[in-house]
Length: 299
Image (cartoon, rainbow, N blue to C red):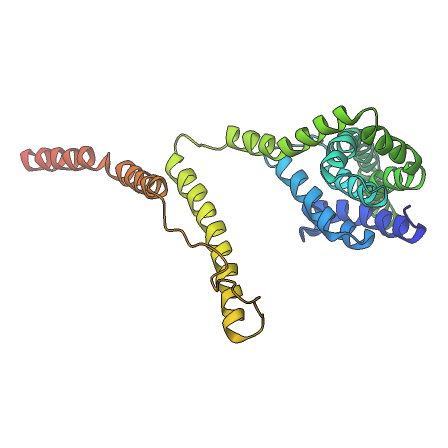
């Protein structure tokens, strides 16, 4: 059950994060940060980071242009994390069943916030023409209030009155509708891939395919290196006497693998392709420069 003080803190944070996203830009208005803060308040940081990180990756390629509205991934992450922890729901199911639908529905509250802010903006314009600065300050802050309420009201209502519905959904997905819960878990795991696909759709991947390959290989190597460092740290702790092994247990706790031929081949291909791109126009440029020089000599 979500406690009253958790509802209050999360409601306040819902208003803070939209203002940060619009004005302060401290990264507190992002899905992964929303999961982090909500996880801290709810007492389960791991679930908050899992939902926030997955939602962040799911919207990597989603952007706004001009005054366009987009799904409110921050509030969706907040509500999904809160209910996942309070109802002991699987985080991937919470992401699919609660996080994504709530984020989509709150597009309409975003539009309401924009409409209200437009009203207060025109009021500020009229105040400037009349040089009524006290009224200007009031209307200016009312614009901020309208933005905050566009997030705080739905978050508060969902957290205060949505617990019975979420618990009923959790029981159903663990019972007769377990097949649906398994499907939603799979869908939740696919959301980050969808975000990467949207992002790659808009990036100049064909032009910079070599850098994409290098980035992928380096990320994979860093993961392998981190695992090896953990293994080495464990062995060093054993040698230092911090950990005592049972009698007859081998000292080395893990295996160390070198670079595979595929890794070496991918790195080589990427570097060769970068070299080719940088030098494919060099001969043409040299010939053009030589031709210009000949023309100048003739003149």
